[in-house]
Image (cartoon, rainbow, N blue to C red; front, side):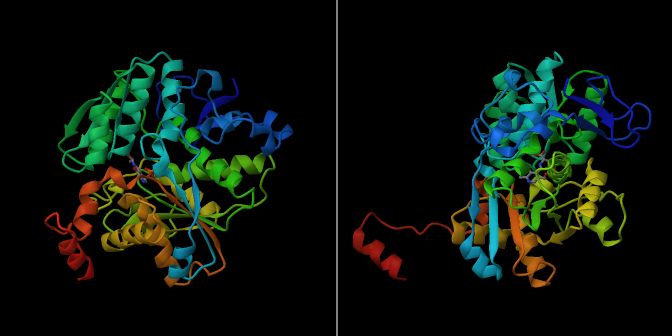
Length: 404
Ligand code: F0G
């Protein structure tokens, strides 16, 4: 065993594979990896495997030979010169997580999480989701031959994500309530051992999500960026990136950390509110609302971990309006040819806001993590673009339209 599960708050070792919080103090759980063997290695030693989550198997708590995998990760890191010009900066990269098998970064955590479910003998897996987690879990459960139940906030899940969860054969349950209500309910089912919970409160999920940072470092030849910006919803991903950084530091592969910068939507910003007042805990937002439905979350389970990640790296948390999100989404599409869903565009919108206020300086090296594919939410795109022009099938009519 190259790891143990411990309580993030009191340090107690947790043996129960179904536990999602500490029996003693109720704290959040985390995986403690034994990285002693990795200290003898160099990044090049991992390069014989293709870029992707399992390249980094010495940092993962699952035996690579037992992985349930759809060959996730290995996503592009795009240099964005047009955006650099527009925003007034010199080095900007976008890590395009929309290129994962189900179109979001969730696949990184799910390959590890579902492999763990199989290892502990689970037969039924489940989650609450704003959409992407359910799409990803449904696919990996199909691959593993497990039953899968997903609880979704009624009417608030983007079309592409809902279609994926249904298509991969999950039992899809629409909940009268928001994501926070759905998560509370699925946790009750997990407490009764009715299903194995695969929300990111499961400490194996962030382990897989660490790989986005490992890949960014590989793609930048281990030149540490000044800042990494990402959207924050249930708040596990920013924590996963931070955990990856601490582990790279522990094995001596990096000697400094980028400023981790979390972006939330104005209507759903519990972490930003805490950051503004310097608190390390947060007050839930009772009725979160935003066009970026993926991050429409008022009570982020990993919120305290996210704040730790932000403070420890001298980063920050910032909120953006729905209009700023949609504008950033269009800008990335039209200037760079990169299609992301609204929540993912929040990272670009946050960068634009922080650059305008001077918080981000022009020579900072920045990586924005864009977490999900544009096709996840076609309705929002269609609403935010001019409609198609109508024409009869006639070349000169079309020429007239194109000249107009
Ligand atoms: N971006 C996208 C596209 C997401 O789907 C999510 C979360 C986030 C960012 C935020 O990541 O929760 O780790 O802070 N989606 C979850 C879901 C909640 O159910 O799909 P986080």
